[in-house]
Amino acid sequence: MTSLPTIAVTGSTGNLGSMVARNIADAGTAQRLLVRTPSKAPQLPAAAVSPFSYSDREATIAALEGVETVFMVSAPEGDERLDQHRTFIDAVRDAGVRHIVYTSFIDPSPESTFTLGRDHGVTEQYIIDAGLNYTFIRDNFYLDFMKFLVGDDGVIRGPGGDGRISAVAREDIARVIATVLQNPADHVNVHYDMTGPAALSLTEIAEILSAHLGKTITYHDETIEEAYASRASFGAPEWEVESWVSTYTAIASGALSGLSDAVEKITGRAPMSLAQVLKSAEKE
View (tube, helix red, strand yellow):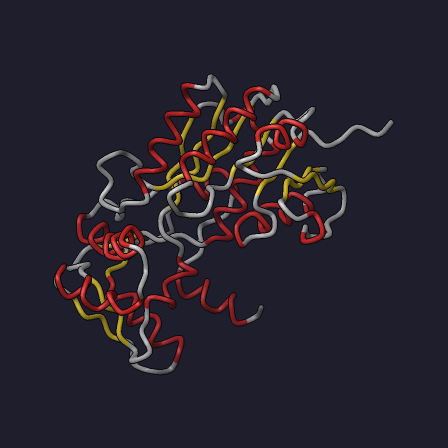
């Protein structure tokens, strides 16, 4: 009887998880893809597919049978996120998994300026309290997302002041995670800050986007009041609007400006710049 792979990957139907899964497949390593809808799982060599849900403890335990290391991509943002995380982590522990690799956020704590970073702090502590070996991949914001900060009028608006952000390419994070999953013994009970090669101001980001897009992009430093007012028309729930605004206040605070050499140390390759990410996206 053929045994199932001992590395499991969640989120392989999403952006980051699919990149992680492809990196593992490219390395010739077997993996188990945990997905809610098996028919949507990517078709990769040496990949088995197992159905599961973060909120379904029994299905998760069954999907993780024989798994030694699991990649846990954070659940979708919302009111049920922490409950889903706790249910999944309990199942990971009860299934006998040895090591969990979790996508967290820079400076995760109950006091995080970026409001969604607070959930990550709670989740990290829950993993520690569960007695699991862990690696926390603490992502800065994605360089891939910078172009989506621009409004239809060519303006980035937000209360970011003159703060800087060392945003990181999603592909760099995926390569780090794939490396850790294949060599978990080298990364036991540690966290890694994931940053790009430079800490950029929003004005500098606008200039780089201008050069790439061939049109003028500018940055307008909103007040907090202006930021909430300019987003009120979207009809989003209060927690989501607060997270949008806190994206910028976190930049202004300086909490997202630190630089880390973790990407290069773990993968052997320097992290991508914003210009490189934009150029790479053109080829896709």
